[in-house]
Image 1 (cartoon, rainbow, N blue to C red):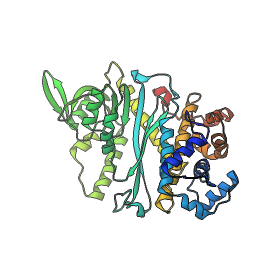
Image 2 (image 1 turned 90 degrees about the vertical axis):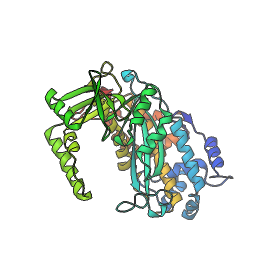
Image 3 (image 1 turned 120 degrees about the horizontal axis):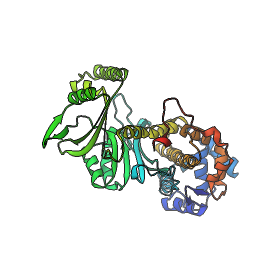
Image 4 (image 1 turned 30 degrees about the vertical axis):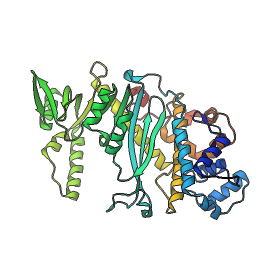
Length: 425
């Protein structure tokens, strides 16, 4: 299979995984390699039909096989085989050191988020959704990327009912020392922030909703509400930088606040009003004041990182949103077919295998150029046959394909008013 992300998965190794999972028990027409190859590349930008997969086997491996025989291959054992291959690829990715600078003294910069998409209702027992106006069956995909080292990990499939907060609790036992964590509010709790401080790790995130904020003045604890913060911001100009205690358990942190433009504040209030009309709620005074501010908390000291840099670095969180956008727009991971559950899951795992391979391609390019994530994934789709030949036709190191690509076509064009990720780091 060639050297995939630093680990050589030979025919023997793939066959071993297939036999261990029961996917292949004896010599047949279809091998572990041919099955994996065809499932990944026969429908690279959609979910391939049974006829497409059968035809692909004929063209690529000179194997005549019926669509019925292909359908019989979609079993729980094949699903386990593909899940194991995906796990191996994630575990053994090359550490490519995308940026030389270990920003702010940290050795990793991890961003985590989730995305969800609906699947056929018949799978609601395995992957229940919210029901009601939503789907009866929903898959939630948790993904974590390390921007400093170009590593994609923490990839897991869960039901639509599995929350980011629950994922955050399970992650507490895997906190790494010297790592910077940037996450959306759904993952943030006072316990999470305290744990990172205890493990000598760092966080940058928005202030959790409804958090109580205290400041020490002349030995006394004074509670600040949103109105007080808003007045303080207006009085001081455009920003504040305070040492505070957060929540009833008083987690020490640094609060950085910045006024937002008036049109942004009005837009936030309009969206809240639309939400209130739909769910018959009322906008609180607290929210009205908060709408005029961006409030960030971190455990970096002001000597380590300036408040302006903290706000810049938090925008790196959008890199994972761009990743999800590429997976959906280019690889179509969310456009599932209404087919039997084993086939759907097998093809989804193959989409994720391709997603990991493409991420390695992107990370390797980042060591040479300011590559565009969207352009790289589009290039993978457009040149899939060439990439396929490198991966499955015996190339020792498939990432050498980079030497055959005119890199200028993959450069991320600088948008006016936007700061490059590399410059932020």
